[in-house]
Image (tube, rainbow, N blue to C red; front, side):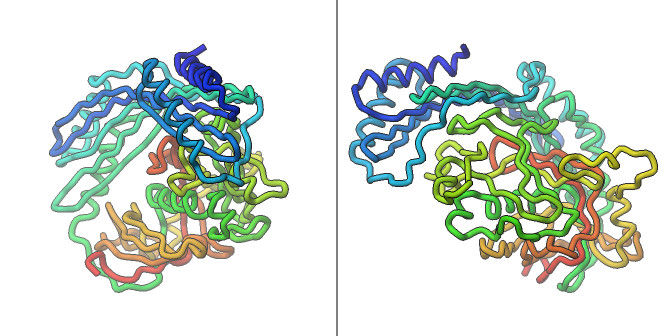
Length: 465
């Protein structure tokens, strides 16, 4: 039994001793983080910390209360239980309580790497040195390693524990005010090649000097994986959220062909390089979930509460977040990936056949008569969740493509674009043949993104207005 599971059992025992007739669940998360930051090509910060968070949920007399603590000593756990018991007695009625997860096996895959868990500051610094030396330009960014260990237990008899690791390097190289970027996440620090990433960032910075200004309008685009990651992140938050779907605020229509047939979106916490856990915050086993299959919307991410809101055949898909409903998020897919060209569900045998051609990112560029190559989308804000109209800016490199050749760097542009419309039937002209595993702002997780060739993207002006 892990230390985290012992803590969870200890909290449940304290709840039983109160004599309160309650359903109870406990989630214990332990995290160790090592972070190395650099700026102006020099490391300026090393940080290492360990934190343990204990979350207790009680449901009694039709009321629900949740509390957390970072204290794991006897007094801290006792106070956590006392506070939660006091809260549940005065909480408002909770008619949507979905009940506890029943006993079920939660099996993860090999997402834990002992070498990454034991990584030192010197090992992270070596990746930074590789990035800086290969860039040969003023560089900034960070290298981070994390170890996650979680345990769950409830009074219905469900119990689970798992652990995973992650390693991230995210950096920029700058020349004459122009930034080039490169980033990567994996479950293994050994997969993070600082020199390769530094060379990629520098090449973009050199290629972005002296950009020209283009008028606003609809342009054909090739989005690099880093830009596609923003599409997938916003789809996760605003499109495939079980809460938004239950409230009628999501664009998703199950069974409808809302995307181009080349689009297949899968949330897979066990994909190679993705730091996933075997269970969610409610103890429900995680699974590979097909959200869009060859253009047809098949599912959204549910926890127990949003599945109960929808009713019918809806079930939890293992996507509950700690305190997710309190934060207004509900359930969201945090390991979302767009399958590359040549893959389907299940994986197509043609993907590995000799003589079967699949487009690389360079192939996508060569197929553009006139358009733009975009590295990053950032500062994106959803204007209308139902249609997922998003506004934002390009960043870290935009280039004009003419007759299949990159001809000039372009100043950053502002855009307003419906993301589902950009990927609608007939709107996707090509998908790259390989994915890049990228860090995500959705917390513990990763985005798997190939390059993407789209028929049109609506640019509304320059970055300054």
